[in-house]
Image 1: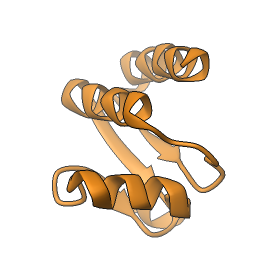
Image 2 (image 1 turned 90 degrees about the horizontal axis):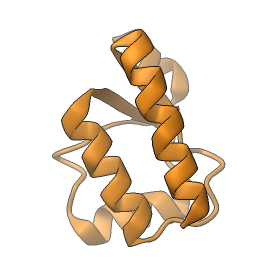
Image 3 (image 1 turned 30 degrees about the horizontal axis):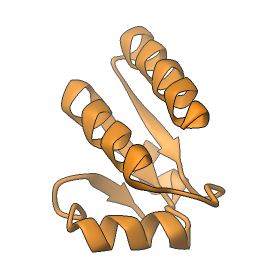
Length: 82
């Protein structure tokens, strides 16, 4: 939970400074409902692109049915390209 709170604060700061951001999710080894709530909240506030989600993150997104709602890209380069 502490990591999610810290990550959300950092993402919020970057979103304000840059107007959006790309989250490289390839190395995330644990993701639960707290992480999902944070991702959905950030998505509502800014242009959030999620790049290369790890298998755990991809599974969470699949179980929650949010793949069509979130902007998910297979690679970091693909997320940056737009």
